[in-house]
Amino acid sequence: MNGRATGTNLDTVRRHNLATVLGLVHREGPLARSALTQATGLNRSTVGALVAELADLGLVQEREPELSNRVGRPSPVVAPDGRVVALAINPEIDAVTVGVVGLDATVHRRVRYPTGHIPSAAEAVAIAAAVVDGLRADLAKASRVVGIGVAVPGLVREEDGVVRLAPHLEWAEEPFAAELAAATGYPVLAANDASLGADAERLFGAGRGASDLVYLNGGASGIGAGVIVSGAPLTGISGYAGELGHTLVNSAGVRCHCGAVGCLETEVSQSALLHVLGMDAADPEELDRALSAAIAAGDPAVTAEVDRQVGFLATALRNATNVFDPQLIVLGGFLGALHALDPERLPRLVGEQALAASAERLSIVRAGLGSDILMIGAAELAFRPLLAAPAS
Image (cartoon, rainbow, N blue to C red; front, side, top):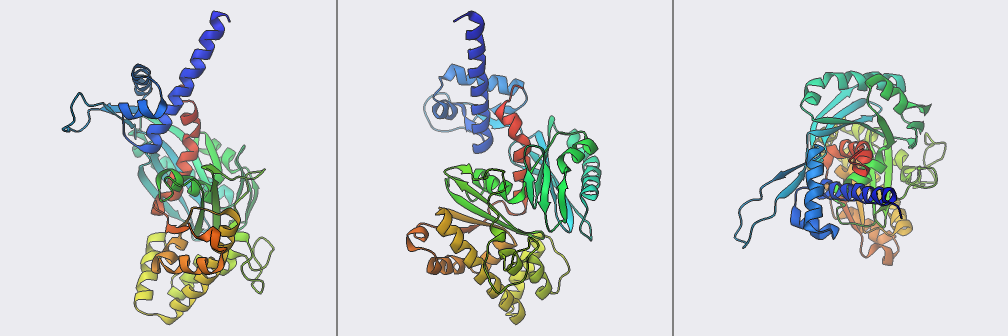
């Protein structure tokens, strides 16, 4: 083997090791250098050199650990640099939300721009670009802006960010990522919102440590789902897997946007909850508070609607349990609010309907990231190229 080939191989190994160390620090948060040595299996001097290079690249920071009673010199702590940021965008039927998220998974800023109507793709691009422009003061504090990640409530072709179909937004074959990149000057990646939410919960939320989970997100634009199998996203051949919002829960139901009858998202919807609450619109926190107050007050209309929706949701979760055999089902958006009203109810209903063997180890929990989940999920999409090749 000639010297050039050897050098190339060593450089490939170094780049791989850089990505491994940065990925660990990004996912796990601040880690002692000794913990990185143990986790990677590399020797101390190699880890020290990798951390120094990442620090020179402005991706991590080293700091002295807190004092302890342990004998010996404590190992320096390595943390992701939160000044490296990504922009996150989530278009919905009633708003466009834009966030600034650090490499440490901290949401530095979130701006929800209500639209009052369903925005076209061109309108959503214009709104997002204007909000990004208004965040210049926040972005000036960043050491690097890696790009934009978009969480779309619909089917997205990930290789080019074309929204194939977002029925509630009434978008079809929209080159959203390319148009947003042209409007902002940043590289843009786009994917399904629930798939990104599943990834965020797996990495930073209620799904940490779970190898197999199903995430369902309920929002103004319906219900989406993301599935993690053996620690990896289940995407399907074209990236469209996980559309549990369009599974049958009521054969006598109404026709859905997708053309089928009795889909989950026609029977379980945020708009129906808002209607019985006498509200035209609400952000997730407002809806959560209003639901809790109405149930506590014994409002019969709200109680009946919640009972109806929880029953159909349990049917969908039974199907997910039987099909995927997950360790965890995580509920986000208004689905999390429904679950929080009586945390024992859904597990009981699903346990009564699902195959006993599939349900015996199942837990159903509310999403841990709250209203930040899609911001963190979209940002994670934007961070992927950097995490895969930190030295590029």
